[in-house]
Amino acid sequence: MSGAAGPGRAPLPCAARAAAALQLPGGAEAARPGVAVIDLRFPRGGAADVHEIVFKNFYTAFLSVRVQRAGPPGPRRWVTCLRDHRLMPSPHTEEGSQDYFSLRHHQMLCDMEQVTALRFILRQPSPAWLHFSIEELQSPQKDFPSWLSQLTPPEQPASPHGELPDPEKVSTEVQQMWVLTEVIRARQAAARIGRFDVDGCYDVNLLSYT
Amino acid sequence: MAAYEKRRAAAAPAPAAGSGPAEPLGAAAGGEPGGEAEFLLRSGVTAMVREALLKVLEARPEEPVSFLADYFERLVLGGPGAAEAAAELPAPPQRLARALWYVRLAHHSHRTAFNNNISTAYEVLGASGRRRRPGVDGRLYSELLRRICQLGAAPQEVAAALLRRVQCRDHEAVPFDVFRYGVLTCFVLLEFVAKAHTLYDVLDGGTGAADKRVCQAVLHTLEEALGGSDFSVPVRYLEAGSKLGPDCLALAMDRALQERKLSASMSRDEFLKKATALFVAKVKPVD
Image 1 (cartoon, each protein chain N blue to C red):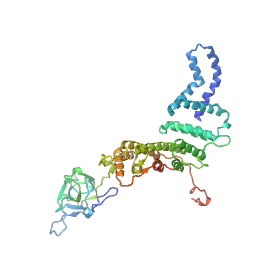
Image 2: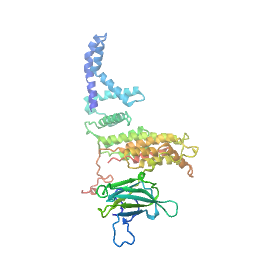
Image 3: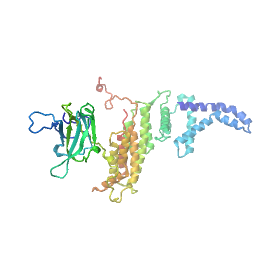
Image 4: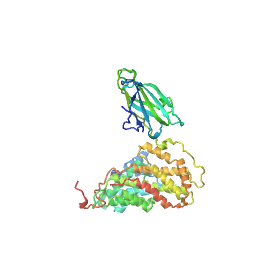
């Protein structure tokens, strides 16, 4: 029931601790307070942008999320980015109890950039469910090719350096050469001649029995 | 063979029907327009002229008159001659020349016309004779490819490098697909060489010697764009377009020129060799 990365998605590279239930200090018996906390912290103090949080619910009714950001040095504050987000329409019933949820950054109250730690506060007020948690906690990272994100060139050549050939003409020719190579690369002779020789030689001793 | 039969059928009624209408035509010297049009149709002249015009439109030669003269000469040679004397097939050099002529008619980008011409050339080359079996063997195929590369003025080593990938051994029977693939590759290589020449002209800026750093920067960018990812086709085009745009190329060239190396110059041959090496590396060998 701890936050673990599922297969097939880039997981948050972090160390998760198991859901810890809130305890009243001095309580002898293990009470069932209906509030649990999951902490996620990046290893070695690293920070990352969190675009999206994906998880599978397990009978949690309300979720709050707080983040700790890599900010100015000193005691770091926890900022609430999601307050009492309702996961189950009715805490006593089954609806939404095992659904998959996805939280985007535009649903959050604050910026999710350079996050060092995440705290998930789970609440389940109903006495019907003894154990509750969230599972398969992941944060898929966006995989953007660098050339696509640079739609405008970062810098222009400062001075034409004198003898620089005309880039437009060069570009035209090079692009045409690229197209010609692509034409050939995409094609292949459909029929095969079916050569069985080993390095140009049909010596009987080199042929295999299979 | 269908093309030959068409021409044979067109040519055969011509001598037969020619003598027939000659008298009535001579008699009706005043000329009814119906009689003349009918004569043309019956003798097959309409079909022949229409085919000739279609061929001219496909090939768009620079000298249409000599092209037409060539065309009609081959028509005469290939018409009644082939029907009568199957034993007197032209020797391999003549068949090669004819196949070469067919293959050069259309540009490789006009895909349908080019494919039609290649099929005709394949038939010509593979026609059976008294002493040989039908089909194109590796020797004829390799010889044809060599001649194609020669007439495009591709440098010797470049052509050799490509042929090594696409060639067939002398004794092997060449299927049509492999034939088409080989011929197409040769023509695309010729166009690639022409473009590389133009590129070198741009890079040297009329001085005749291009800066080595600039050439290497441009070739390196091209290699990167080619090498790239295994994404689907639209993404590859987008990626290549962004990498080979004027801005990125200007940046690459500028960065190259700022390097503190001795500015040597790269000769045209060396540039061609490096550029075509990129091309030949992408050609899938025949196996």
